[in-house]
Image (cartoon, rainbow, N blue to C red):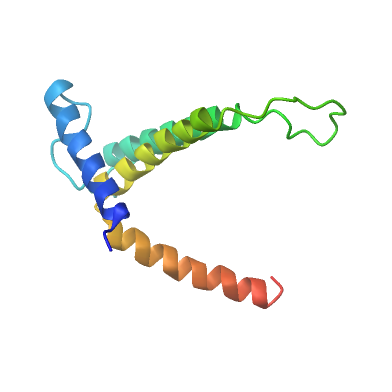
Length: 126
């Protein structure tokens, strides 16, 4: 079984490298960043905010979410555009992980650990 998550990280790392070539100073030359440093934290914050902004763009495609709205939009959202915006957000979040020194295994391990926590909370009535 191939690992698509690893491929996604590799594609994003390749993008970061290309960005450095085409747009110097778009990404720091030395990675991973020392996230205890102020400039590194500012860079990480900017990446995270760009990802959040892309998620807001995805949400703009959802029209029937207001519980108080009586009329509904008959046509559904453009699923391809909705997914594209989510992919844009993921790209920024992958960049954030990469520049912070995390890889696909770190993400998966943290995901599994958190999954166990939330499943315990669910079962315990949290």
